[in-house]
Image (cartoon, rainbow, N blue to C red; front, top):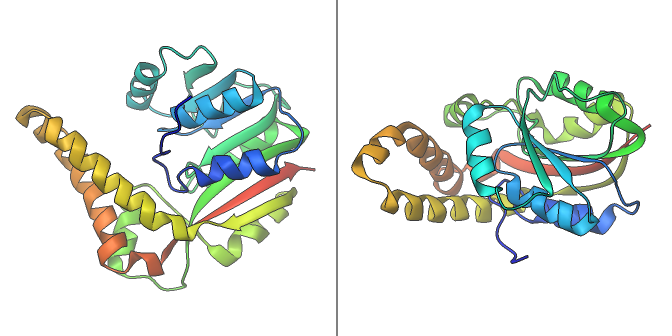
Length: 235
C-alpha cells in the first residue's frame, strides 16, 4: 500500500506509534472518527485482519464508503460514539485520532471502555490546550469544531481515574504545524477543482477550516493548541 499523509491531527505519527508499542496482535479492532479510512486500511493491513470503522454522521458515511469501496477489510458503519451497537468486551483494540476531544468525551470514553475487552488497548490522540488562559479566537475554534479540550496536564489524570493503565504516551503538539500546512495545501487543491456552485455550497466549511489553519499558523495558536497521545490498557 502506497504511504500517504493521514490528514488528521497527529498525521501518521499516531498510527506509527501504535505499531511500535502495541505488542500483542489484536484480532477485533474498532476505529472511530471521520477522515480515518486510510488509517483503518493501514491498521487492517498491519495486523492482517478486518476492522470496523464508525462515523457519526451521514455525510461522513457517504464519503468514507466512496473512498473505501475497494477495501473489503474495512467495514464502515454509522453510529453514535457514545451509544454503539456493540456488545460488552467485544474489541481488543479501539483507535481514536482526534475524535473524542468533544463535549461528549465522558460518555464516549465510558462507551469505549464498555465494549473494550479486559486487557484490551485504547490508542487515543487528543486535542489539548497548553495554557490556562486563551484568547477569544481559540474559543471560537473550539466552538466551531465542536471541541472541548482538556489541559495537557489534566489528561493523564483523566484516564487514570477511569481505570486505564498508561502503556506509552507522547506529546505530538509539534506535529500540528505540519498538519495545518498540509490542510491548507489540500484545501487549495480541492477548492481549485470545485465549480462555482460547489464553492458556494461548501463556503462555510472551507472558511472554517481556513480560519482554523490561519489562527494556528499565523496568530499564535501554537501557544494554546496541542495534541497528546496515549496507548492505554483497560484494567
